[in-house]
Image 1 (tube, rainbow, N blue to C red):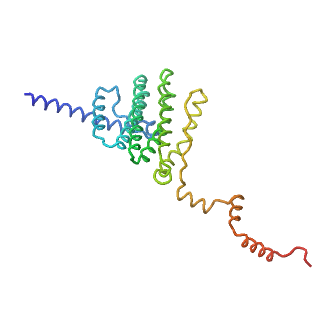
Image 2: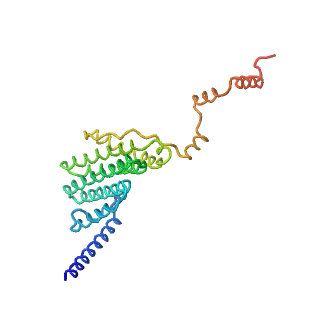
Length: 274
């Protein structure tokens, strides 16, 4: 009898879990326009769904079976984006209080991601790529956070402002943790994508600062190496400035310069000679 009851409970659990995963996939595939624009992953079930506890249980099991601090950092980063997507959808539904709590969980997950990556670095592991991805995602999420800040009522703006500040701080920390060798060799492409996003984020930061919102500025840029195509175009088509021409001439031996000048005088006819 007990075995039969246990099997029945397990079957019911599996049925509801399968239903949750199906709804998760459906919600992920039907992301709204804002999520498409900002490339967020789908939120799946929201915290106000009666089966949300199964989603939390599933995420907890996934965390338990994720080994290695770099992998744990990647998973925490993915879960942070899920919390942001949930909060964004809750704001659109007018559930501001629940969205605030979800935004706090977003900050916790991203803090976890950086903490795992930092511990991996302290243990001697190569963390340049995961740090670069954290820096890229924190910057990418700013567009969503700025828009959410504009949509929420005044009483909820403080929580969003805190998320913006913490995200920008995490962006700065992740950039500083990338080695210069990786900047030159390994993660240049990720840093170039970051550079492409910077102007839009800086503009929104300036707009908020002009309105008296004390959000921090972006950190200084990391020097990104030029691509091979960029170097070729510079070598082939870039005009030389006077300074560059002077530098090039200064590299020619003095004797050679005198010979060139003498040949030029012989080829130019003298003006006014009889």
